[in-house]
Length: 498
Image 1 (cartoon, rainbow, N blue to C red):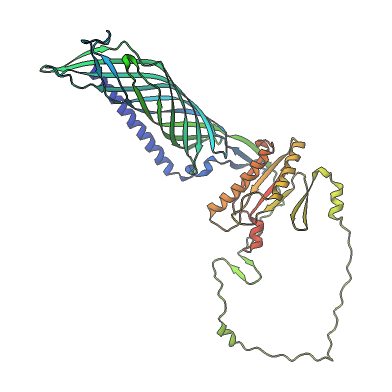
Image 2: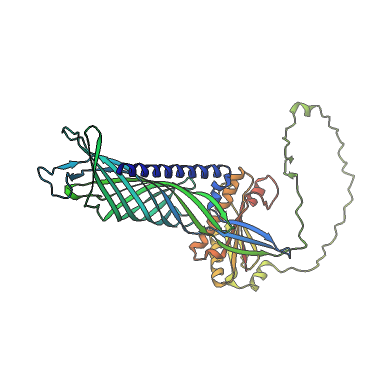
């Protein structure tokens, strides 16, 4: 009967392993057919828009959540080691006749299932989690050496443990998007255990005598675990909830499992599992009113530089010096000294109206809304903080993404303005020039925006009041291929809105 039960358990475990492998293969195949799911944008903030019946555009900003909840499950693989001694008759104290039986190391399997919560701050390397495994089965079987008698007697030990495991842990995100390390503590609470020792011997046919052990495993274990996991975006539910699949592997070790009769049995546990977690994004809307007078800007196919006109798809070839020598130049006689050229009359300037100077405009504004930024030797930039006024700051190099002192000075005043005006918000848009691949330009624009957002967060501005977007090189401020045009295009735009 015991052999049939063990065979049945092994069949169940094998089916569970096949099911887990099938689900893993299905997930990888699904993600392979949809490359965007493994893109780093899965961890980024999303922006999408809808048009209303009045032709207004409602922009939705989705910010990834710091809190995630889900469930996990998988396969336990146990290796039991250490000294394990059990009397021949476990119901009596050991003596000369009731000698101790030594059991060697053994292996076993099992299944587990539980719940898990994660705290994963955006743009941070570290996170934390807490998992509670309600169903944690660990089974093992080991055989003793054959006793030197006429019946070739030997003993088989079967142990089945059911734990409730509580595991707080820390997480460190590696440079590869989605790949992370795990490490933490484990508190195993024994819910139930079943141990049986079978005496088997050969006398024409194998006969088994089953004895259920009266002793149990330790009721509590303390240990730790380390591991590695990989996050994969599985689904975007209702444009609000993100679902991730996370296959992972952990190794666990702890205090002894069994210590009766002078034993010191321990185990190393490997968990191969899959976590499914969900996060509810924070959603903020911004309405862009319809402008009936808006016209699309003209599309240019060429740009003018000082040297030549550059057409896309055509290479400029300089003239051969030998060809210039064949060009005949006509010599012109100089104009005589007596000859005069009639003077062209110059019209007198007509003053239509005097415009106020920038200093006079500044005097009309409040001093607390005036920002004076030093942009170089002897150069000042005066900005008045007010709603719907867009200010742009450029970067010196194509790959530069760090904030300059002028940007930080302006953001300090933006933070002060937002604190004085609780209903105001700020829109931040990052741009790049055309030097680089599409992916590189998208990444540079995104990094510029993230640096601005993080700077405002450090100045106690709530994340809900910051609307951010990045457009790569798709929205050029100046058309052209000169360095001046590219410098104007690699920029950050900051607008105060209500």
